[in-house]
Image 1 (cartoon, rainbow, N blue to C red):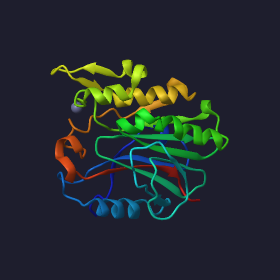
Image 2 (image 1 turned 60 degrees about the vertical axis):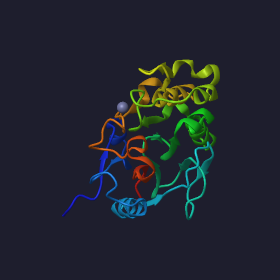
Image 3 (image 1 turned 180 degrees about the horizontal axis):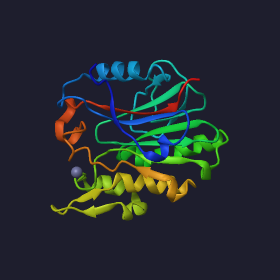
Image 4 (image 1 turned 120 degrees about the horizontal axis):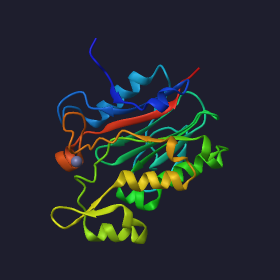
Length: 235
Ligand SMILES: [Zn+2]
């Protein structure tokens, strides 16, 4: 049987009973698969564990509570029942997954620079806490995304972060700022109260690792998407 889903995983999440998660890696060459085909393939592979719920991602910080039908506009989501798997589509933007092993709840966020500046990871954690989670119980993981090695940005983007951005930008080889999206989101997770030792990550750069990931910066508008997913399996 041919492989239908390949994904990077974090050990701390694999230890949580009943949890299903992954940071998808592409199976074929760049551009080999239409996004709708990726959605169908991943949804059917995960169907035993639950229903894959996707969003219409718009680079904001709105959080949606599962379940839903269709693909509503939002960039983060929370699920508090088994059988609901949250999916975040990326091709350079950073996926952020959060798990409450006590309450069997999960959150997921899509964090490009706009979502990061708007605090989408912070909002995702806040939605879990609003549902009864204690921040110190949470586990978080950031997934593959464009690294500071490759993420040269303009000065106007630098300005969007204001003073708070001082720690996340470094001058690159051409003198323009490079953004560390992962560092910015890890800080939001810490500031939301998740202990540093409970924040994990798959720190691959999607643009550097052409063998594993789609990349908008590398492949342009027609780049495929990876689906990053998290949820508790249906019982
Ligand atoms: Zn890179």
